[in-house]
Length: 103
Image 1 (tube, helix red, strand yellow):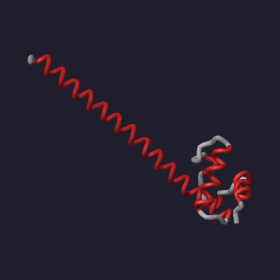
Image 2 (cartoon, one colour):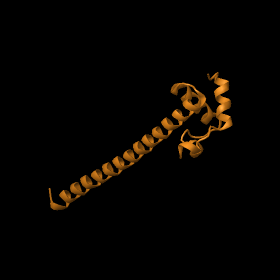
Image 3 (cartoon, rainbow, N blue to C red):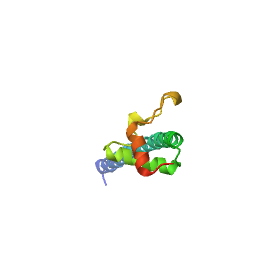
Image 4 (tube, helix red, strand yellow):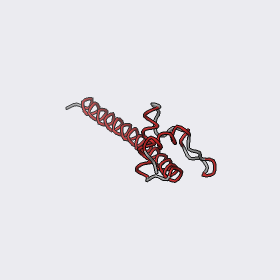
């Protein structure tokens, strides 16, 4: 094999490694977004559970129904707890809770 053939093989290997690194960066970013979403959803569950006096699982069902009914993602900025004193439960969510038979 001449030198140009080895250079081609080496370049192909480098290109494959670069693709693998880019793929890994994309996957890492997606996992970080998923983790951040989980944290936000968990906080919303806690707020709803406390405010509506339901279990965290019931709060998640209410939150999911609210999001699906409005074709929004569950991590909507309108549901993000910003400051404990300023968090309010939208009337629509309270309506979902009463439709669910919340305690």
